[in-house]
Image 1 (tube, rainbow over the protein chains, first blue to last red):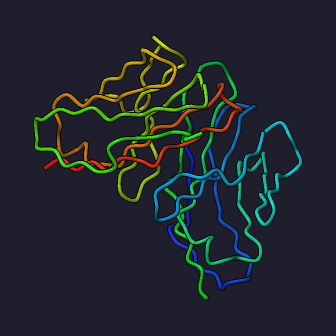
Image 2 (cartoon, rainbow over the protein chains, first blue to last red; image 1 turned 90 degrees about the vertical axis):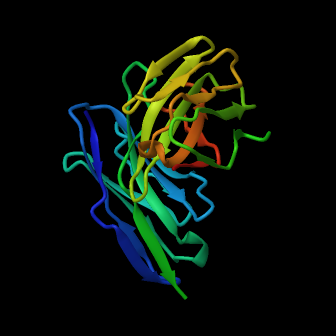
Length: 116
Length: 113
C-alpha cells in the first residue's frame, strides 16, 4: 500500500514571502500521479496542482510550483508571493496510474498560516 | 453546473440510528467516491463506483453501504451509527480514472452521540 507523509503539521509565513511545504511518499510503482489540495476553513477541497510521475518537468500554476524528485520520492509545494487567501490546510495526495478506480491516498496535511 | 452537491451539511445522530448521506453530480462523471476525514487527518476512501450499478470497497468500508442506480447519484448509507463514525464526509467525482481531477463536494459533518 502507498503512504504519503507530510512532516510539517503547521507552517507560518509572512505575506508576500515564499514558503515550501514538504511531502514524501512511498510506492513501488513507477507510474503514478501526485496532487496538492487546498482546504480552506469552508472545508471545500480545491485542487492546487497536479504532477504526472512520467514527466520530468515540474508542474507550475501561477504562484504555485512543485519540486518533484522521483528518486527521492519527494513532492514539495512552493507558494510564491504568499497572500492572505492562501491560508488553509494543504494536503498532498497520491494515486496509482494502473487499472482500477481506487481513490487518492492523502497525507495528514499542513496548516499554513499567513502573517499580515 | 452545480458540480458535486452533498446533503445535509450537518447532522447529529444517536448511537444505533441510521441515515443516508446524499451526493449528486451534474458533470456526467463516471467515477464517484466517498471519503471520510477525521480530525487532524487526511481523507480516507470508504467506497467508490466506476459507473451505475458498479461499486467497490475502499480503505475503510466497515459500517457503510453504497448504491449507484444512476450516473448522477451516489448515496452513502450508515445502518447502525457508532461514535467512531463521527467525521466529515466528502463525496467526489471524476470523468475517468487516474489522471482526471477529482472534484469534491462541500462535505457533511456528522456527529454520533
